[in-house]
Length: 156
Image (tube, rainbow, N blue to C red):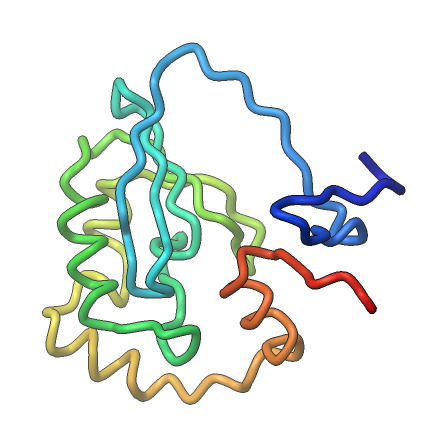
C-alpha cells in the first residue's frame, strides 16, 4: 500500500508510517484487555495458550510506563497479574518492543524475574510513580494520533 492513502470513515490514515503486517493464524486468537500503560492496551493470546502478544503492558523484564496517555500503575499491575501471569508458565511472551534486542520470554520468567512486577502492588506503584523518565520526543504528535487510532484529518 506504499504511496497510496487509505481512507477510513472519511479520514486519511498516515501513508508514511510504514506500518503493515501479514498474519496467518491456524487457531483462534483471544483478546484480553490489559489496560494500564494506556486504557486501550490489549494482549492477544493463541487459543492453546502457547503464545501471548503483550503489546506495551508486559515487556521483557519490564513494563510500559504509566505516566502519560491516561496510564495507571495500579491498573497495569492488576492487568498483568490477572490477564497475563495467569497463563501457563511455558507460554511464550512476545512484547511490542524491547530496548535491549530481546524478542521473547515466558510467563514463568516474567513472573519470577521481572524486577517491577515481582513487587507488591503498592511497591510497584511507588516505583512507577518515581521513574522520572524524560518526555518521549514524539509524544505531542503520538498521543493525539493514538487517541484517534492513527486517523488523521486530511488537510483543507
